[in-house]
Length: 170
Image 1 (cartoon, rainbow, N blue to C red):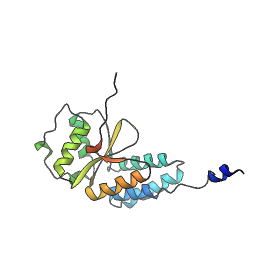
Image 2: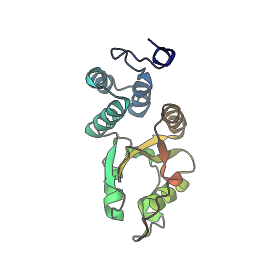
Image 3: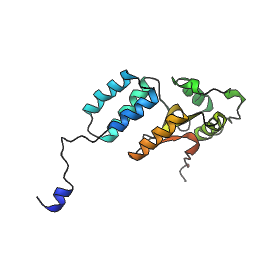
Image 4: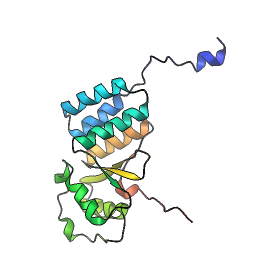
C-alpha cells in the first residue's frame, strides 16, 4: 500500500460520527425520546451524512417540528405552515399587526416576524439543498446552538432574516 493510500484510506465499515444530528434533533424537539430513537434506527441504515441529514428533516416533518414550503409560496400558505409547527407558541406576537406584504417573499416575511420577536425566537430554515424551505421555530438559545452545530458539520440552519435567494437571470 502506497503513502497516499494509507493517508486517505477509509474503512467502509467505519461510520462517520453523526452525533451532531442527534444533538440538533434533541434541541429542536426538546429531547423527544421517540424521535431520537426513530432517528437512531434510520441512521443505522444510512450510508451517508446527507442521507442522515435528510432523515432527520423527514422525522422532524413527520412529528410536526418542521414544515416544508416552496420558496415562492403565498403569504397565506406561509402563515398556515407556521401554525402547523408544534413550536408555533414561540411566536408570542399578533402576526396580523405586522406589515407582511402579500407580494413579498418568504425571506421578507420571516425577517419581519423575526424582528418583531425581538430575539426571543426565530423562524428558521433547515437547508436541504432544495427550492423548498424546511421551516422550524426555535427559541434564541436553541437557534444559536443548532446553527453552530450544523455549520461545524457542513450543513446550514439559518434564521429567515439571513437568507437572501436571488432569482435566476434570464
